[in-house]
Length: 244
Image (cartoon, helix red, strand yellow):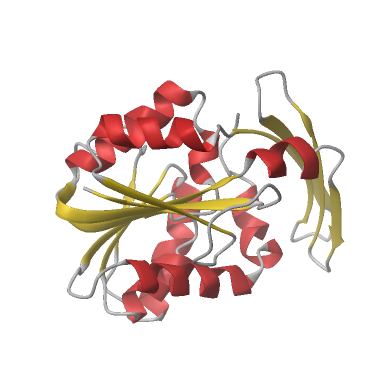
């Protein structure tokens, strides 16, 4: 799997801005008042980090992609927001301090290679959460991966880029492959093609519960699709709120 290298150039253009409002609202409902130091894992281009900063949190954003972080830094500077951005892997948070809350949105946990890595992320988060701290993340449901994504195709044409997204099942259980093709307009007016390949995998609810418990989380609640309702058989996105 390649990281969002080229994707960074068009990521903001293709993302639905309303999702950031929903992630912010969900977070504010589930992070207790008084929790200020917040770590956003897989922060991407910094839109969500800025929303958190505007909501009064002291934000640190971590991402693998230097290109995305450059966009995030520029966004924070333009907004005069004091946000710390760190290039790094959520599998190793040893360079970071302690936090009151950690978030990991946009199904970023699903990019871990297997459940061992998912468990390792949970352990890292637990080690960097203050006692009573909150960890919130979302993942694709098994329904979304098994029933919705296979055969999914999305095309978008804009003045400066064209984008094609096709998804098909992968070999491991509850896994999907996204093939992304970009045509990005150069300064000379020509378009350059880029191809990226993304693998995502999810697990049964019980698997996540067990891994969180093994990592040291005491209370775990699960919700569906940005609401405060429990998941059902056709929920597309699961939200976990875990307390250390």
